[in-house]
Image (cartoon, rainbow, N blue to C red; front, side):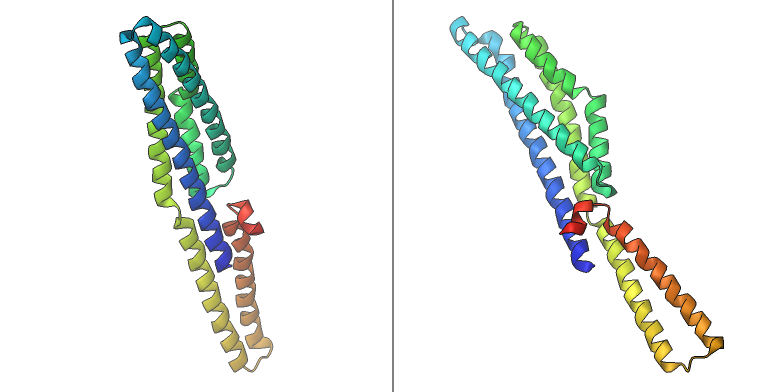
Length: 208
């Protein structure tokens, strides 16, 4: 049980680290693209056309990576626990800040040579992505809380089971004193049935 909990925690940490890396990559790419976009107006016509084509492609690549990030967040949202909630909150942030729409608008305005407006779209998308990163980093700090709760429950069950075993071995059982011991064992059994629920917040963890 302890090994399963540790693996579950490791899986959660790896996934939140992966999400953070994806968002940081998007932020870095969008920041570079934004800097190029706002400088397009000052370029000579020949250089401007080449830079514009490259920037449009970069912006499309960013949108593709963004859609992949959405898929990951939707997958993690079903995990439950702090990680699942963090992913759900992240999706809400992206919806309320309209990052998807801003990325599409940036491409459209670049294609129309509306550089200032495209820069505003990119800046708005960056704001939403940075808010998302804050939420993921906050979630990273929470990972492990569920693990400690589960481990404490396991330790307490082991302690209770040992005490009950010692009491049973030291007692001459009859109808009077057997019933309370049976009740205690039944209580332990009920607590054991809760462990899969505690460990099952990340379904894949039970298969490791």
